[in-house]
Each structure stands twice: as C-alpha cells, then as structure tokens.
Amino acid sequence: MPAATETITRKWSYKGRRATGEMVRGIVESATHADAVRDIRRQGLAILEVELGDAKADVGEIVDTGNRRRRLARAFKTDDTVAFCSQVAVMLRTGVPLKETLETFAEQAARPEVAELVRLIRDDVCEGEDFSSALARWPRIFPPLMISLMRAAEASGMLDEMMTRVAKDLAKQRKTSRQVKGAMAYPAVMLGVAVVAVTVIMTSVMPRFAPLFAIQGDRLPMPTKVLLALSDFIRTGWMMWVPGLAALAFGAWYWARSAMGRQVLDRGKLSWPVLGPMFRNLYVARFSSTMATLLSAGVPLLEVVRILRDVTDNVCYSAMWKLLDERVSHGQELAPTFREFKFVPRNVAAIIAAGEKSGRLPEVLESAAHVADEDLEVSLKSATSMVEPILIVGMGVIVGGIASAMLLPIFNMSQVMRPH
Image 1 (cartoon, rainbow, N blue to C red):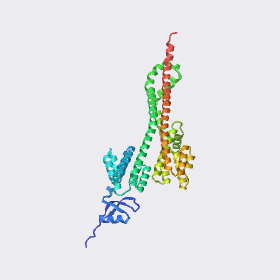
Image 2: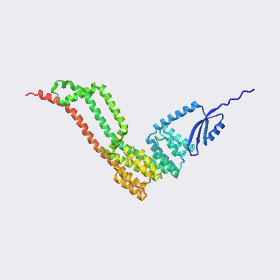
Image 3: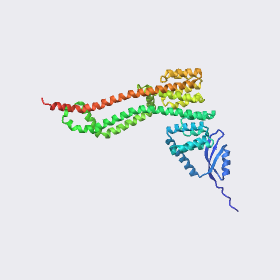
Image 4: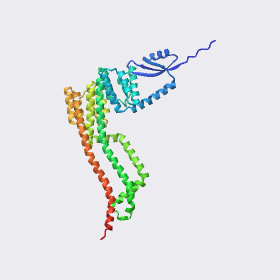
C-alpha cells in the first residue's frame, strides 16, 4: 500500500491593502504560491506582493528593518526636511509626477541616508499608499502639521501648493529656532569662559603664591585666607566635590524632567524679566502661524487645536490647548479662552476675536504671526544686549575679587618692608 504523501508547507511574506486603505504586511504558511494567494484573499486583502521566505529570515528582516528605520530617522536632519519640502514643492509645481519627484530628489541627495529614506517613501507611494501616510511612518522627521496639511492637500488636489506652504513654515521655524539658540549661546559661552578662567586661577596660579602668603601667617587678609582654602579644596578635595557636583547635576536634570520641575521652568520662561518677552513672542509666532496655515488648508478647527499642543512645548500652553479643545468640542468661540491666559498678549486675543466675527480668522492670524515675528526679533536683540553687560560685570566682579585677594598680602608686605 503506497505511503501517504506528506504536504510540505512554506512561509510566504506578503503585502496587501484593506478595504479602508490600510497597508498590511505579514506571513502565511501554505504549500504553494496559489494557496498563499487564496489564504491572503480570504482575509479580505487586496494583494500587492507575495514572496517566498523562511521564518527565521523573515524575523531577522523585521528586526533589521526596525533598526534601519531608526538609523535613517536619526540621520535625517531638520535642514534635510526643509530641503525635501522645498525641492518637492518646486518639482510638483512644474508638473513632475510625485513618484518621479521623489526619485529625482533621492538621486540628488547629498547624503546616502537621505536618499535611502526618500526611496523608502517612494516605494510606499508606488505600492499605492497615500503620500501623507507614507510620511506619517516617520514621525521623528515630519511633524504632525505637515502630515495634516498633506492629508488636506490630497483631499483638495493642491499638493504642490501645500508643499510650498510647508516649506515656508518649516524654514521660518528653523530661522526662529536658530535666532533663539544664538541668543542663548552667547551667554553660555561667556559663562563657560568665566568658569574656565576661575578654574585655571584657582588650580594653577594660586598654588604658586601660597608659599609667599604663608610667610605672613595669621596676618593674611580674610579674603586671601578664603581663597587659599578654596584653592586647596579644589585641588585636593576632588574626591568630594566631583561626585557632589555630578550628583547635583543629575538631581537638577531629574528635577527638570519631572512634572513639578517642568512646570516651574515653563512658567519661568514666560515670566523671567529678560528672557520672558522672547519666549512669549516665540510661542505666539509659532501657534498663530501654524493656526493660519492649517485653517487656510481647510483642516477642522478641533484637529488644529490638537496639533498645536506639539507646536508650543510648554505646560502652560498645554493647559490652554486642553481647555480650548473641550470648549471647541462644545461649539464655543476661541477668543474668550485666549483672554483667560495672561501669557497670551491682549492684542492677539483681540485679533482672534475680530477674525472670528468677520470670518477671516486665517488672514488675521497670519497678521498676528507677522507682528509676533517682528516683536521676537526685537526681544532677541534686547535680551542679548542686556545679558552681555550683566555677564561682563559678573565676570569682572569675580576675577577682580580674586585678583584683589591675591594682591592684598603683597601690598601689606610692601608696607611692612617700607623704611620708616
């Protein structure tokens, strides 16, 4: 009696699309390609690709793909995002199809990581996925604002116009961020120079004067005694102050990331005497420009409010957006909520109220963003001009105090040695 033939099953990897448009990837076990296709269709999927593959290879490929995507996301910088939006907008506006546009950008990319990522987006688009969905796979690179605008553009057929608007908004945000970082960098550099100078004086200069000062014994001035003790502690007590300083830095970092610490810091950003106006104008420029762009594109107001939470990374603004979300859901107007929060300028709240009454909210928000940008530049220059003399005076007081403490014993010795 002939032995029964054993059916050998194989693993098939597939790509498909649900009726809702969602892309699906997976693995099925079937004896033949036809059986695999039949099994996949039973799941209600429109098949895009079916390939033979082995289980271990598939698992390894999934892990490798995840690592690859993380590597590419880290390598894709903000400048690359701005360049991508700008060049894609130009090519789409001249009539170049989207798939060809993406391939052309990948060929001209300055770095291989950028080209590889853009080709992955192109592959998703070629498989029938929407451009917005392909971009949404990379949340670390493309912000929610851009994804929402791309969805609105796909619905209205104005992809080239929306890409141009996104490129301008991202370029403006990059310029503003650079201005703020530049204003903060100068004080940081000055402070670093002061710390290095004081450290060199305390560890290298003071020990050379110590034998000379020791001759005077108890007759040393008190500032000099304190300075010598501090110098000895820095040089010989590093096993105490280095771990202490590290623990203090870690504690400050941990506190800043906690809910209480972040709330204190975020409130301080809006109320500090010198930097407060700069941060207030920065947040107003960001949210008013983003609201204008999204509303002009036809994005629903409720979705706009939810996107704005990512634009203004501040707990005070987060509380405002949460309250605004609740009130907009119940059909209430925007302006009364903006008036309740002191960190929103009164003129901006008045502009929003006028825009709601006239039905021209996107236009008036764009005007508010322009005014906030101008005020931001003024506050940046003001902050820089005020911080610079404060730091110079502070450095002068510290270095001058150290120099005085070092020179006082020398003056005393010269007076003692002076003939009577």
